[in-house]
Image (cartoon, rainbow over all chains, first blue to last red; front, side, top):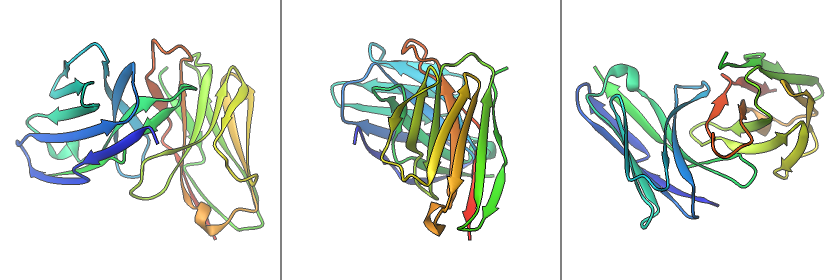
Length: 110
Length: 114
């Protein structure tokens, strides 16, 4: 498998707090992506970070990438109840397909 | 239009039935994918079509038969499924070119085999 573990597997926080999710991968990559999935629905692309980038921001999202450790983190600041979802990191396979990590289920309590 | 449309949203079928899942996109993407997702698990790749040709079949049983009639459509034909095939089936599309690797997903078909 090209993907390792994501941690934590589940995270429960209060509205307004920050949520941090981590992802590890096993192979060399050109980029790493993060996706969000609301319960039982399709996945939505959140943010992409390229292998020559160390940090990237998009609104309340901050992604870091450490290629030496083969790891990435997703930080959601000032979380809202609407952020409740599962979050997956993904790297691209040789045929363009995405290979997903196991995901973190985030629950934000109002 | 940045949508991938999947139909139906829900499907209940018996083990002797034949049914089809449909997926459509009009973003000009030449790569289309079927993923299977079981509860509390990440999506797992089933098939990849690149320029309407099957390029990956991830050892999927023959009771699942993909079809790509044109660059906008992707079908998954189902026959003689087992209860363990019950899952969320997701279609996705993307550019073939690695420079734009973002994938767009449909909302999925929730399949229940009885």
